[in-house]
Image (tube, rainbow, N blue to C red; front, side, top):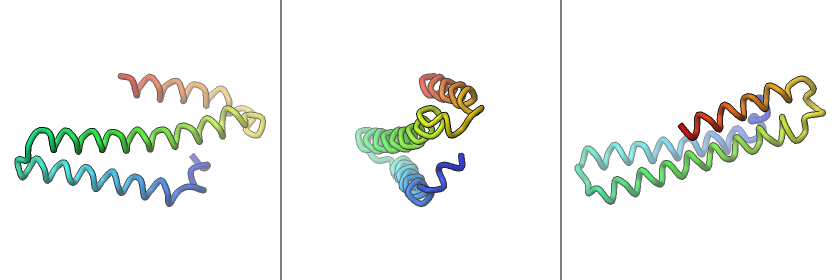
Length: 91
């Protein structure tokens, strides 16, 4: 995914924030915090993951499907990859 290089730092920052959210969930469980607190942290983390997925997926679509002429031969592979990602997301 060479096209992610231009946004590498932004993507890494998102991943680091998600890691922080996961650490907060772990601490909440270790400290036996209330269910609502843990659920809220989990949903926040899930939202952050969905946001990361959306950014990378959008860039993939724009790079490999919308601008397919610039990447001759990759279009079919990109379509199949996109279908596989969407299928795995909804499992």
